[in-house]
Length: 529
Image 1 (spheres, rainbow, N blue to C red):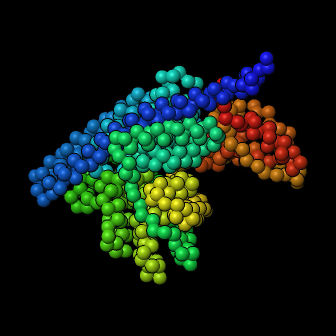
Image 2 (image 1 turned 45 degrees about the vertical axis):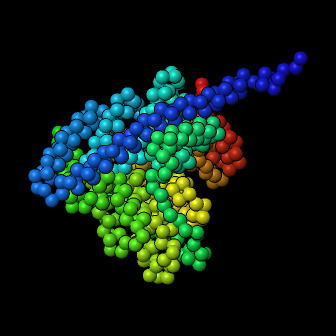
């Protein structure tokens, strides 16, 4: 009898197929674990924020009660600071730490990070700091993937994939948006696309979203309204908003980085003072300007009100929310900026629509620009335009927004890139890893008929971990620069290649195609070996 097609397949191919199937099952398991943890995290934050509103509204106007609230903030500050000292990997949003895990350049203790981040985030929500849940949710999900990997005793390469699956599960559960979770994990964290990876990440995100919807409900975290698409005659406003969001995205990042730099000048033995500043401001905001507290749900209610706010009130809210978020995030407090970023984008879009309305935009379309502002500022800050488009699609539930949202996201992405200001998470990752640019230069490029090309080093590939001088480069190939975590490096022979490095190389025009093929094979991601 003849062999079946499966039996006749090479052993390596059958092993690869079996591995791909097992990866889907493991992705689902990560979705259950990560989705369960983030669901509990969301419930804890929700109860903490409700308690915050109830207590501060009751204490307002009573000097003794207000003093008692500040005393409670001092206790919460001490607990959060102690937890951060116990596990430093929980500082900040957590997304750069997950990025570094996927690159194989960071090894956080998941058994400490998960409980510490969970408690810290809950206490920060109770304190009213202007921080989001999405970054911590990504870290909680990523560490859940790492926990599953360690429990199943998987190899390092597969562990990176499961961390990516966990990040998608966390983002999906945080926003109640599974496609956004998938795209964010692939576009921002893993930065590689392959069929097995996409399927496993998607499985993890969908399982996580299903779990959170069963416990919390199917309502989105933020529901945006999008009226039927704009008439094409009004698309000039869409273009202008895209350009504006790109510039504001760069300004947002520059300001955040500057605040971080100011905080870094506080001596290490006074690190508690870094946290004391945002806690003190949160105490003042609780009684003076409560709309600024937490992620920004109160501002979302303002944007969704039947009577649209005035331009002045929108601009004041925009400046206040941005400055408070910058002070909170720059301190290193264990919280994210994604939800505040979404709120800021809505304010930008809302303010722009008021101006556009005075220039002839029909008032009917003002809500559209709130959604467009969310996509534009997200793309300008994070530099993930595809994720921005999908996020707004899931928050609006309307395909009518696709054309205008895509235009805004692309223009914001390009404009922000042209300012030479770092992408937000790439800058944070570079700071975490201590990436520095090499001062060396490249000289002596022979010949005149040369072509340029790029290739990305895959996780677990043959090139990962090798020195430039150790690589058997194809004839005529010379690496000019390496882009790593948003930083351009001019390599020397002793430069070590890392996963996700993007190599810009030069090759003889006639040998370029052969060089591309050989380098693609050398840089191919491997996870099952």
